[in-house]
Structure formats: C-alpha cells, structure tokens
Amino acid sequence: MSNIPADLTYTAEHEWLTSDSPATVGITWNAQDALGDIVYLELPAVGTQIEAGSVVGEVESTKSVSELFSPVSGTVVEVNDEAVANPEIVNSDPYGAGWLVKVEVTSTGPVLTAEEYAAQVGS
Image (cartoon, rainbow, N blue to C red; front, side):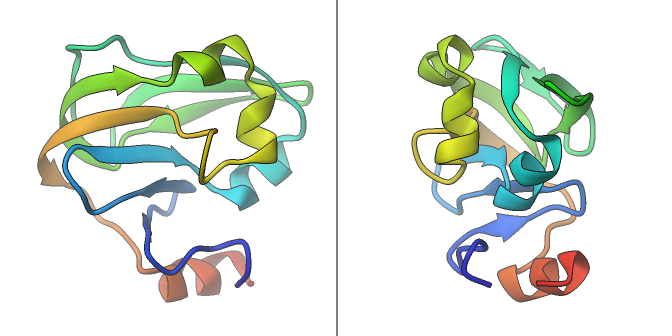
C-alpha cells in the first residue's frame, strides 16, 4: 500500500482527494502508472461548478486518453497551472506537485478509504 497514502480518500475511478477545504484533487499513482507518460491535461477553469461523478477533464498519455471524474460537487477555486504546463509531474509526483484542481466542496460523491481503494486495485 506504499503508493496509496492513508490520509487521502479515493474514488473507484482512481482519483484522490484531501479532506481539507478547499479539497485538493488528483489522480492516483495506479492511474498514472496505467496511463504511462502523461503528455496533456485538460482541466476545468477556475469558477467552474462541478458535480460529483461527472467528467471534468481529460488526462492524455502516449497510450490513451482518460476522462477525469470529479469526486466532489462544488466550485473549482484553483487549477494546477504547473501540471498543465508540465504534465509529466503527474507521473513523477501524483500526490504532491502533480495535484490537478482545488475545489470548494458542497458535497462529496462516493469515496473509498485507502484500505478500500487498495483492495480494489489489488495492492
């Protein structure tokens, strides 16, 4: 479980989020590993209202394009411009410098604990 920090919550679609407000959202180590080299990120603009479970962006790699699902409903208050400019940091540091958006949360969708996510991905 070394690639699944215990202090975060997760979604079945391989996103993670923090419990603070605004919540920080990103993709998991497992997601970036499956995608391979990430070359492009399409993220929602600051001020965008997002809904839990809805598609809010795309992560493009040399292998495929994957949709980014929001684990929460709320308003995007910050976008990681550094990750947009240098998407490879999502591969090298998905839980740190590779975060994607920060959201002022109004409600949270279905989330998993680190243990539940580890069981899902077979860690």
